[in-house]
Amino acid sequence: MHELSICRALLDQVEILAAEHGAQRVASITLSVGPLSGVEPDLLQATYPLASSGTIADGARLKIMQTPLRVRCEQCGAETAATSNRLVCGACGHWRTVLISGDELLLTDVELTT
Amino acid sequence: MCDTCGCNITPANRQLVYRPANSGNAVTAVSVLTHLLARNNDAAGHNRMHLDKHGVLAVNLMSSPGAGKTSLLEATIDALKDEFRIAVIEGDLETENDARRIRARGVPAIQITTGSACHLDAHMVHEALHELSLDDVDILFIENVGNLVCPASFDLGQHRHVVLLAVTEGDDKPAKYPVMFRVAEAVLITKTDLLPHLDDFSIDDASRHVRELANAAPIMPLSARKHIGLDTWLDWLRSEAAVRRSRPAAGSVPGHASAPIAAE
Image 1: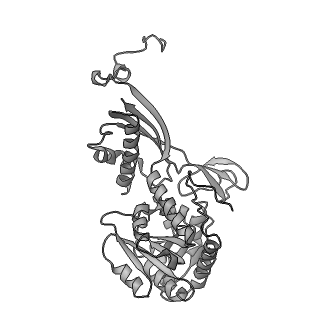
Image 2: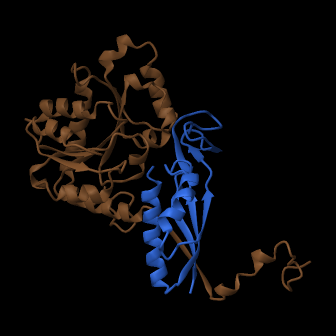
Image 3: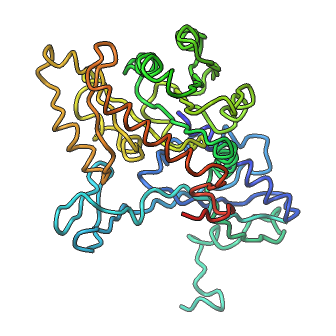
């Protein structure tokens, strides 16, 4: 259950941004999270109220955008969808692929009330 | 209806359009795009620079509890202690037991007890690095907390991730824990001396599951206790250590956006 550590790291960044912009409240936070990030969106969502309690981001809306898993084949060049434990090429079946989307763990947007 | 004059606002969506009276303040949208663990990753980059400055190879050992990380280290130290100066950072929730086992082999071991934290992070490793004299170290092993989930998300500043899979755990572990096994840069299948007693572990199937994660990492079956297959692992360590010694002070910090690009 490292979602609490992740949530605290997120709040540290948001607090710095809020201070930089002289914000009084944080209205919303948007994240981009992939299935291979190692972070469970539901757990993060459940942990957020606890972690943010008493911070400037208390009560902010947490929006988690889940990114799709996609790979590019090094053999045939096809870009196809994949699943977390089968990252093989969807076209030719080869396992030598490169992940092009799906391991994101990004803070993308913050809405601040000034 | 259009979306300019307000005629599209109905009683049903009114609350989505108008903010409550007490938030008449301006809302500023800020676009960020930073990694959620940016601070950890910065600290990891800092650790890696320290290690590179001293030509130290840092290996992050990860596995479930009881897969044999400490036994592997004992056997590795016994085999290599005349060849390399080895140090170990031990991560556990509680106890100094593992650090004691390592010190008994005659090498320095720094114990990090994480309390309830299920993983090591770069800041903890940074603290531990300050207790070591890196000028006197060739290979640093970081034995992570036994856990196949959380440690995978935290860069510690290591050069290589090594993941252990004991034959008693089942050959489908890589399919069950893809985040961990995808980042492995070497996979050690441990306790192979027990294979004759198990009818449900296939090294081929375990390897196939690793490849299906698009991972080309070497897969090395071995038994630390019975000294089976250790040479492949020791040779892998020798070649990785040689790479580090040949490029000291490069200051390369892979995956760290603000770092200078190292000349390859």
